[in-house]
Image 1: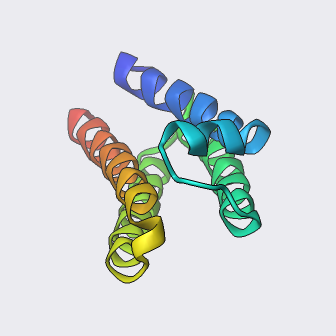
Image 2: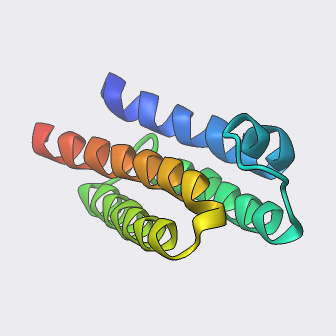
Length: 115
């Protein structure tokens, strides 16, 4: 497995676990303001997806899995851009989320090109 692929999988796992286990701390670090129940629930669902995706695109992942993972991250980035435009209160959090998802999607594309 390439170092990039290993780094992506580990990064996803750590990020996802942090969202599931300590959403208030992570969202607070992003200066999301007061963390409400909706944001906390969303963070935990996103975290669970990141943990699952880390397992799917990690060791031994096929090109198809990596492609699907990159597509999911790209779609997530687009929805966060839309949220940033529609919800002023969540704009900063949505923007950071869009940047993270974009970086993960790009990393997946780079990994596919290396094959």
